[in-house]
Amino acid sequence: MFESWHSSQLWGFQKEVSLMLPYRTVIIIFSPLDRGRAASSMIDTFFTMINASELEEETLKIVVDTMLEDPSIRGFLSRGGVTEKVLGKLGNPTPSSRRAALSLVVAFSKNVEVCVSIITEKKIFRKIGSLLMDSDADVQEGALKAISASSQNPEARELILSTTQTIKNVIRLLDHGGLSISKLAFDTVESFLSEDRVINMIAIPETMFKVLSKLGDTEQPLREGALSCLLKMVGHVSRIFCEQNNLYSTYWKSCMEGMRTRSS
Image 1 (cartoon, rainbow, N blue to C red):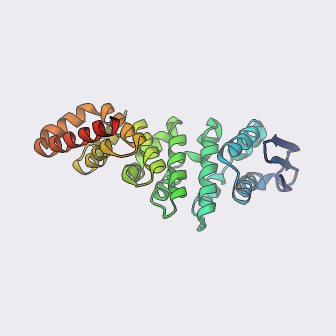
Image 2: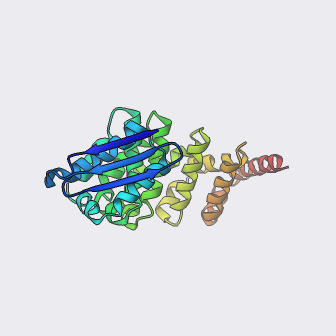
Image 3: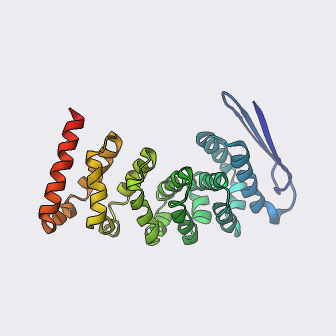
């Protein structure tokens, strides 16, 4: 299968990226035009690539990583206006377009320079946080991946933590019902458990019930995710058990019994 994209709207580049993959060849050519439109057009080009061709996540990563090796491209992306462009893509009414935009955020977040200049904006994470509650499960999963990837950057991590509703929405997905989303939610929550403010959001009866209930889940990844989270906040768990002794002791015993039954 052969696919190619040609952009005549990017200034200053004669660049070709060729990827020989098992089932497709990707060729991207940039040719010169207007400097002022370059960064905006770059986002459009990336977005068109993802949305129109439904590139697999790993293929997209290779394409974007290869392009970001060029300091000229990184320079254009670091200019003003690109954040608004990405924000607009995240708000697209079509689910496939929102998924594509989230994939773009994940790809950009892996480059420190581009992440700092484009992704580290509170409004970006507010929007991604709202997409955690999207009606499309794939969009929800994409939003979790975007938060997880972005949180590796210290500045982006602090912005995520400062948007309290985003963290609360991640916690709400612990009992989503879909295995991949709930597992991603547990992994994401666990990555933030070094933060007291996140622990305080979890260490309340309603949320603890969500975590404890997964100890007896039929899916092993969810049992492991719940146990891992509990072990990371064991001091807080003990305090809650003391405060809600009868209620939690009974529930804990039933969950542990469920784990033993499924392990045998």
